[in-house]
Image 1 (cartoon, rainbow, N blue to C red):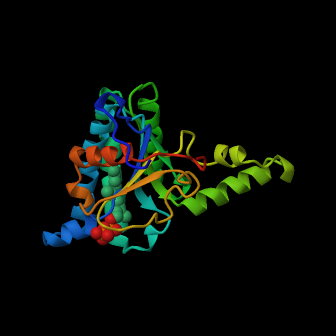
Image 2: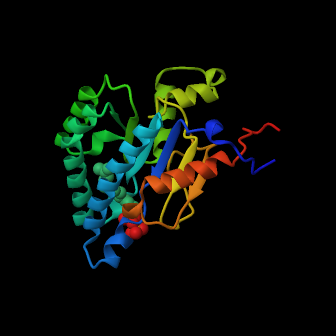
Length: 236
Ligand code: FPP
């Protein structure tokens, strides 16, 4: 049965929610603002969503902040996003106060060294937090991640017979559970190279709301929809 009604006490909070923060550009355009104003609003929304997820007991939240393909955007937009990222990282002490642990996935070696240092510092400062584990995907691409994992595996000298599903998972950037629920706002219905390996059995939820307008109410709607799904992981 697909649409099983669950009573409130049986309502399941997904362990790991992953979001694609889409629609920032359109949000800004609608208001006659530059695209980077949309990204700044999107970053603010992300902080609110992280706090909300922490409050309701989500264990892991991963958000797509900058993809390996986003370097193709105009230099001013790329620099704008990097500056918003700097501000976000400098603000990370507030997260620590709220018991949120920060982490990052993606190839950080291509980022400016001050950003790499701020990322390291944010991870260090929040390492003992026991609440939400909040990850940003930066210079992240699912295919790039798999290539990176395969290179690591080959360099470690294992034989072909030793390559397993688990070995590949263990060599990805995500050293935490796969997403239970992937949320994409703004009306687009694609994965865009996000968590390609990890999404094998994820549930998807789409919404027309543009990311800067996304709120805890939308997270609730996504969780309600998630609770109506029956996850079979290929079984019956
Ligand atoms: C996609 O919307 C959004 C991005 C490529 C960048 C997202 C980045 C941020 C929200 C800022 C960094 C985040 C944090 C938390 C530090 P789009 O620009 O493709 O929107 P559009 O499809 O409406 O043009």
